[in-house]
Image 1 (cartoon, chains in turn purple, red):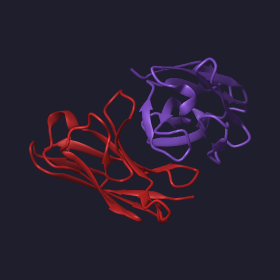
Image 2 (image 1 turned 90 degrees about the vertical axis):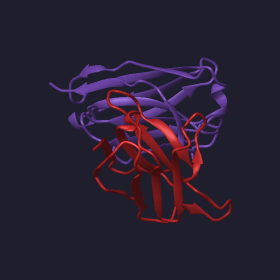
Image 3 (image 1 turned 135 degrees about the horizontal axis):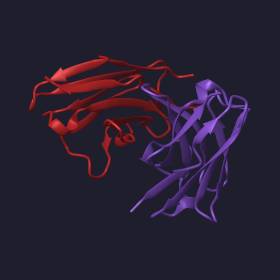
Image 4 (image 1 turned 135 degrees about the vertical axis):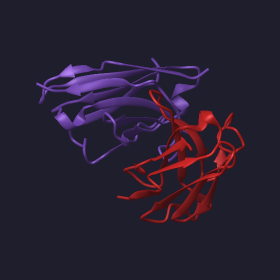
Length: 121
Length: 113
């Protein structure tokens, strides 16, 4: 059974940093691309970033480019999102998602329960 | 960026009746080399993460009831729920994964009439 467990969310001041993690199990982690998707309170879904399964190719939404860094450790089955220079508009539930294949260009096949990030003074 | 639009914003359908949601992309999401539309549909129930229903525009994810179907190609797509059940009350999103940034539609809320 696929399991994705996000952690690391919380309250942070504007300009601060936070690191989210996603622990994956139940599938061959290195064989799948992984994404982060966020959802601001009461709003729709916004894709944030994706990393491919093996070669580590990454892509970012313009709204986070240069501030967020996605990474993965295939030996530990973990996905991370380092978030710097946080802004109020980054406040959202952040979901970790397993893609449908090893490349970045696939659907978001399975989603974790999410972790809430609140950026406020 | 590819902009995704959905219509209607919300709809209310009687139990057992058909629900139809439309999705339009600002650019073609059909990749000619493999003849696949890079378009997915998700269902999000209250206080739950989204769930993949349909990928490649018309392929139903394993375990998804066959009352859910996807159709369309190029820039125009449709999600159909053939016989609405109470458990189908949710917000439905389309998403393109043809090019980054991957983008979602704004969502369509489906309720029971």
